[in-house]
Image (cartoon, rainbow, N blue to C red; front, side, top):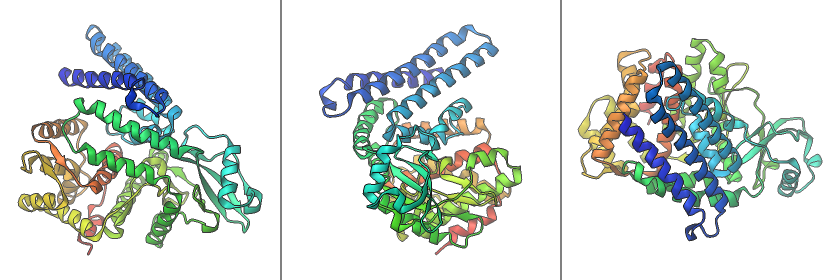
Length: 456
């Protein structure tokens, strides 16, 4: 265990120093080197704190050791939050992703980073006013009966304001941050440098595909016209679905950098879950899982940014799906192949699993399927046990850690060198949902889930 911690810290320190040196080098010519340097210094400070703990804790009793570790967790999480909030752009998106992984991060990290989900630093309104009026072709007062300048929520790419249309409809108006497109392009270049610096501490994998897919995802969030179209499709998909609602865009009040949609009032999913009775927790999480299965296996298009800030729970207990800037389409043949892969795993049919992995575009360095089978077990074992044994069967934290160590060992022995681009977003979605399920451990009626595996 100490060897693994030391290796992680060494890699983190190496990354920090490489980013700091890159900020002054020719390789980042044309980029904003201050952003690179700030990130490098933050990582160096975090690494130094955990390095200090790894050494000093040997001289402390258990109580003082736990207190010191909690203090370091809190200080490190605040440093990460501060850097993400200040840098905005793609940095803020990384912080949002981490804030959703309750199964992986200490509680203090989750508490500090949760604010990035829907409470990022807001932009002054006057530059936004100019942008809104330019996109909509008229003063705000001519387009809206009322408009609240104080933002309802602020995120990495834009922020949301409440308003009422001229015909009395309450709406949410999402506006892109001025200059965000240039900033995102810069951060995506930085992402490549960051992953290159991290390569030495990560197991071999198809990082080119992962990086390309993350870049596609982030750039897609700048396309508000595309997001409005996808929101309308999702609203139609879930029209009449019990327990699920989706806002509808108002086309006449949308533009390249402005998206206006019907307003839905509710609490953030994790806030609602934390105060709900166990039965309501189970109902909400089952509804969330079914909503994703319907998107992936029925519609072939899914919302790929599942942090809790993108889900609300209304007073009537409905689950509202928000923010379709990041979506992924799956053609019929791809979703059929993923469905067949899941069926083969349920049937414990390793020859069929191996053939489907190859068909989908997975490959290991050796050509053997062992590492891929280990990944399948990690993602689907809980679902399989729940379906076959009945009830909610959730692994303990110790079992999760043991499974993670086994998976890492398999990946190091025989790394995955190729994976399909669509799997990157699928893994992100179901990894994040898995973290929520593991944290709340709901009692799921798996008989509601299995029919999605037989959808034509």
